Amino acid sequence: MSRWKFNRLIIISFILLLVWAFSGLILLDLDTDVTAVLQEPSKRIKVLIRTGTESAALRQLLTPFEKETGIKVDFVELGREGYFTFVGTQLLAGSDDFDIVFVPNTSIAQFASAKAIVPLDNYIYQAQRTDPEGMDLNDFLAVYKYQDSIYALPTDISTHFLYYRSDLIPNPPETWDEVYELARNFSQLENQQSPTKWGLVMPAIVPEERSKIFASLLWSFGGDFLDEDSGEVLLDSKSSIQAGDYLARLIREKIIPDDLLSWDFVKTRDALLSGEVAMAAPYWNSSYPMIKSSDSRYKDVIKVALLPGMRDEQGVVKHIPFQHGWTMAMNSSSNNKDLAWKFIDYSTGKRGGRIYTLAGGVPARRSLLSDPNLQEKRPDFALILDSMKWAKNEPSITYYPAMVDTVERALAKIVTLYEEPKDAFREAAIELRRLGARANK
Image (cartoon, rainbow, N blue to C red; front, side):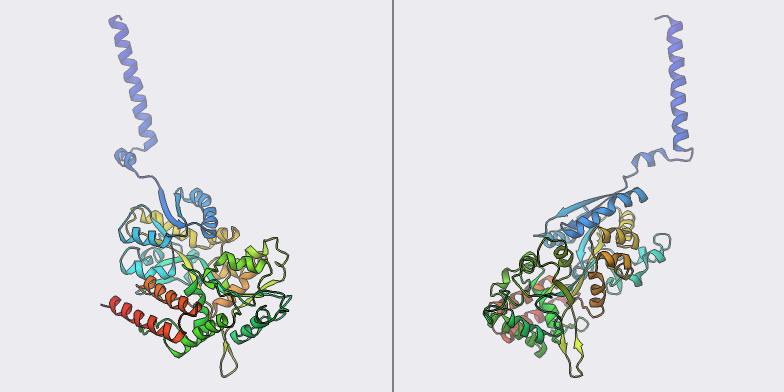
């Protein structure tokens, strides 16, 4: 190559280098820190969530949220079995493998006390992070606190209904005494002419069923597990034992199945759809749309009503159905807290809540449950709102899992007629007092 050609090649290369350099500066902006741009982390967060109807509905939020914010959300889905164990292990170990965790409200005290999840007040009340009108805390049916700080916001609310065959029972029972009489009449072991095998069923399997289902009975009778404020154990109180006696009576007289410990959500729903039972209570509100969308010949005669209660001396029926919320909480070990908050804000907010509702979820906001257009699609929403006027949460305590295990063991003894309720609850109460004393050290 001649010296002239070589020099020409050098000049052309230098000009191309200058063009590339200046075009790069134009694209990046003269004030841009090139190193910072190259090192900028991707706008991506992970949500640890349980597989089910809630996760399926929440997935519908991901595309609109990403379009609006540019933040990519990955769901890390786990099955129902072992979910709580995994969540507890990961959070308490300080894992940063996820930014947000989907947990029931009953887990908040345990994880907040261990500083495994983040208080959300600084995000909620800062105008640059959250629009107060869009957040509207008063619109939530519940927010979940620990030591006066909000640690989780709900996407979903659950409560208990009475399900009944309206072709057999034109007017739903208002009290548990009325339930008992109807259940006797529609149980074939009591009445051979009954068109249904069982007058009453309820799920009683663990986890997540036995103690929660019994809670609605317990509270209606005036009993409780414990006083959340004082910590006083109430499971062995007179009213609590009366609720246990009622359950044992149903089993003893064969008004409900004696294998109740194997009855779960699906088995209870299928028994209603097959025409095998006249009533299911206490039973989850989430079964209603499944029943109505089924091809069962009984679906149109299966109705829902406010959960029964007990009539007081003034003749007023005391209804206290169970309620709880599934929530979004922020992992303390997250490296993307600001991005994580944006998704919590969106998924629990009014816009995200509407998408979630249209996808089959049950929103935790009054404005959505009372929306006439949504109620037209979901007539059970009006009953959820009515139930929530009286509904009650389980205690929010740091030793909640141990409390549930203790109560479930006592209930298993009652349902199998292994022990009388007063004895089973007395033993359980001793254990609860021990757990409480240990937690308060």
